[in-house]
Image 1 (spheres, rainbow, N blue to C red):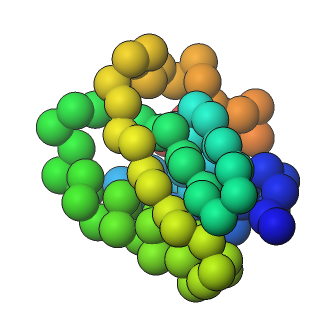
Image 2 (spheres, rainbow, N blue to C red):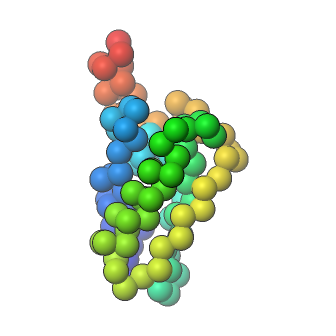
Length: 101
């Protein structure tokens, strides 16, 4: 059985190509639910019109499927609550400050 921490650790390998930060640091992962043979990830993207929409979702699903092949993976893309930079981890904010500061 996978744990929430193991799932989040795997998701740190999924990088937003525009910002160069992982989706966990960016605060894009809202919830991880693990039940029996299913992992459900409730997540968002930085903007609804994100040009990397399909790529990020496919990468997220593929990363989890490779790490947990015995489990079914579901990605629930949501737009509420809306993502804002306030959802980013302090580390991510620090990295962006250095990149764009």
